[in-house]
Length: 82
Image 1 (cartoon, rainbow, N blue to C red):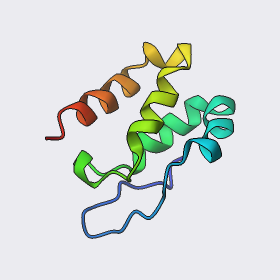
Image 2: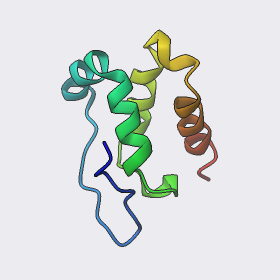
Image 3: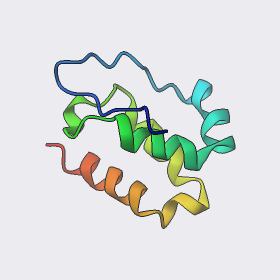
Image 4: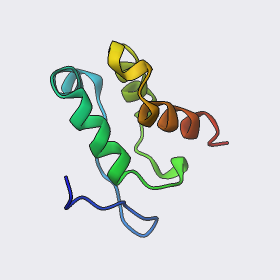
């Protein structure tokens, strides 16, 4: 995924994370999906897409994600957003 870049505040992120559409992708490709998130999400969690908490909960259900430092980092950023 070398061509992916981090989105900034000036860029709009119009991707809606809806569990019913996302579950098959996340379950089937959890490592790649997590890598994509880490590369494109803005540094500021306040700019992350609406419904992202559902995405984190879905990732949490995958055993390999629970000990992944990238997931832990996303979760920590999300929990510290306010």
